[in-house]
Amino acid sequence: MSKKYRSDAFAAIHETMEALHDVGAINKQTMREFDASCLTPVEVLLPEQIRALREREHLSQPVFARYLNVSKNVVSDWERGTRKPGGPALRLLTIIKKNGIQSIA
Image 1 (tube, rainbow, N blue to C red):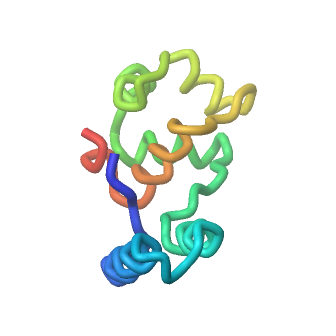
Image 2 (image 1 turned 135 degrees about the vertical axis):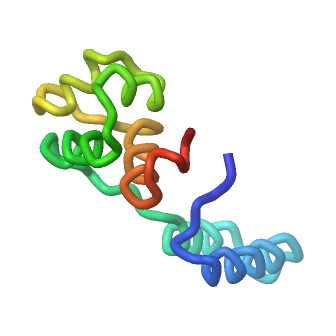
Image 3 (image 1 turned 135 degrees about the horizontal axis):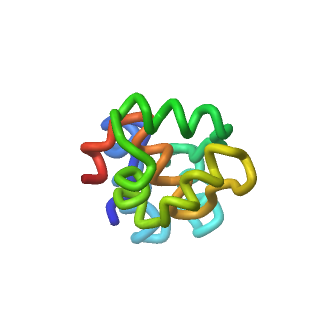
């Protein structure tokens, strides 16, 4: 999976920093800190936000679940607040929020 940057400018700057790291001009710790500042942050979504996101994309819970590769029950649990999305699912929700469902279709 390719990295998702905040902007094209951050992508270009990051590529330059990776080249500097490859030649030893910056150390691994500096590169990690730089990565954290360039990559799209993952935000925690409230149950209402997840439901609003699904509805914005005009998807039912089962179809939305298929896009995220989770069960319909998991989506239902997220929307009721009994479970919280994490890891890859939270990253996908963040991407959908920013770019729409077509970005992962």
